[in-house]
Image (cartoon, rainbow, N blue to C red; front, side):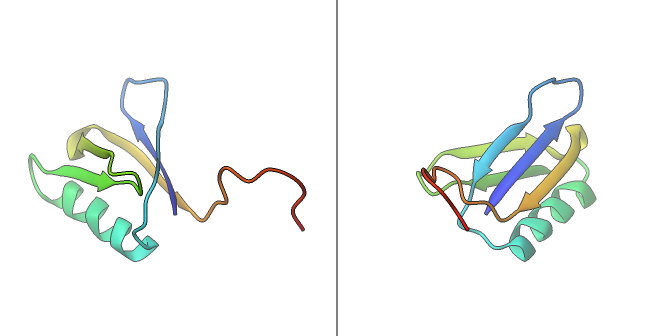
Length: 74
């Protein structure tokens, strides 16, 4: 699952490839936004952890994506 996170006043987005499903990511985002001073914390398949303050989230794009594929797809 590919998740793109936009942070306020930052031109580049954060892209993370997580093993969580879309419902789990949505719940984590909702919890970060609902909690005053909350953070969105996600881990990717390689163990990298991204933590973003909930108050600085601009957008979160949750999509299924095939990253790292080489060649033709049908």
